[in-house]
Image (cartoon, rainbow, N blue to C red):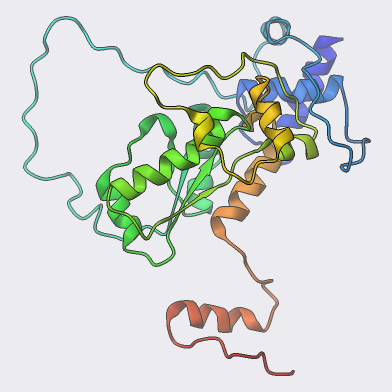
Length: 291
């Protein structure tokens, strides 16, 4: 049964256009095959537990063999050797001295390095004209923040899990951007919250309840006030839903739509006027004239 479910999941995860996907995305796709919830109305909130343990999925994956489109594991951070290494002299200037001289209208920070790698593998950074970084690379380079500050309305999008640490990440990035000299840069959450997970019927594993940190940095204090009490209870109980539980094709469409911003239909008469306004040649009239 698991082998057949995995074969179906492999076909679905890469559809419709040879999408590259992570191992955890394939696992969640297999969960959807084993427990299909697409017939359940969206108005009924559900965050079901995984129908199969990850260890059993890994066993089936080893039996399956090579999986087209599956990304390899994220490379581990390089360890520092015990013996001292000779240091190369620092260059007098960067290899591309004007790299940070341009304005940057948008930036995407992902909580998960695996998700960032998946988005890059599917060319989201090219199609959306948006650099993609992982949160473990924080703090942001001040030169990067300066590039954001050169563009009016620049936005840093934060893609995070529906978890206490994930939801608190937006506040961390906002503080980091402000501390690096980008007070005019907008930081917006693109991630999941418990109500999203329930509406999308995302698989939600159980983890340990959020512990009180020793360093005084309490993620629960950074949760937005807009969270409903039942959402806070959901998080306090150790529930979470990963971005990788969203179907790969849907994740790519959503990220691309958000980073590009609202767009008018290509056949619209107003498209050309909007492009002129963006270029600075005109402003919108107060009222749209009748056609």
